[in-house]
Length: 386
Image (cartoon, rainbow, N blue to C red; front, side, top):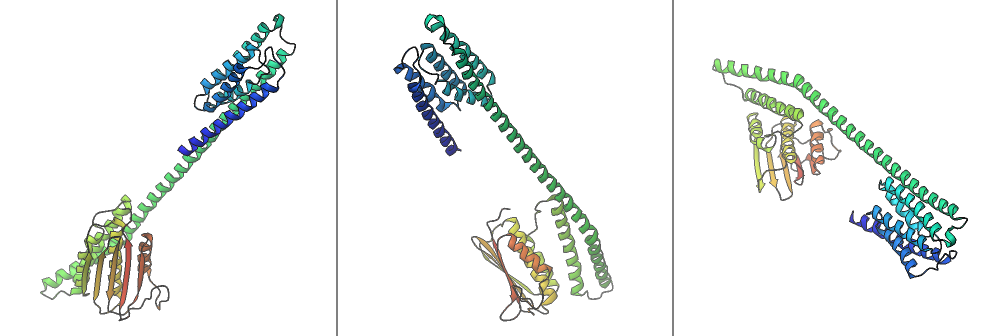
């Protein structure tokens, strides 16, 4: 903004200098007037031209200066009508600024004052035969300059109106897209609720009934049944939390590593030995990183339970200065290779895991370990807006 103002001011001064040279040359080469061009006449020419340097900031003042200079120049009888050139520039700036009445008043004053001065001060009280024609043409050029300025002003106003309409249309499109996204989010929430909550609730109820009957009969309750009961309850809570996120389009508390202990406890009750190690300065994380880390560990433990067979799992969190490193290793049967050269195509869980990490600008490596088993390693940058 400051640079544009400086450039605009420089252009105005160049215009003023160019007009000053033009009017001085025009006066020097014009036909002789009633009196020859002297220092006072040159001063009038230079003053009217120099005033154009500030015509954008004070157009009315500049128009007044150039009009007075023109009338005084003509009244004294200097050669030519070159002061009309700065006046036309001033008229253009004044009309473009929206002062049309002032411009019309100045044109009328120039016509009446200039022609009257020439008649009164001419020898014998009679103007030259071509005086009226000369002043009529001069006023015509001034009117043309004013009309051109009005056309330019109307065009600029039209362009600004078009730009405003385009901005309003873009804002309307964004609001429409946001509203449709909200509607789609609510639809997904309803579909998830209708399709999953009922089934999970039935599993939880059936597991609870089986546990209750076993205890009532003084029979040992299988650990797997207890794990199903707990997992179904946790799944219901997670689903409800997810639905709340979808409905509110916001982050809910308790959706990240603060639930890691419950996740690990559930895996242990399901018969999966899990060891957790935390390194570095443990501290609150940005919400996207916190959720991604939890989901990565959750998906890794799920894959171990489904695919690794009898295995132990080591979960490691390393809080670094600029990133969180997540590592999940098991000693079971590793079957999926990282990078697409796998013997088993990665499932939706691994794809979702990679998408989460990529969205945060991090890195993910999954695949069989050299000593056997399977490993997941993710590095999540902490420079993420929450």
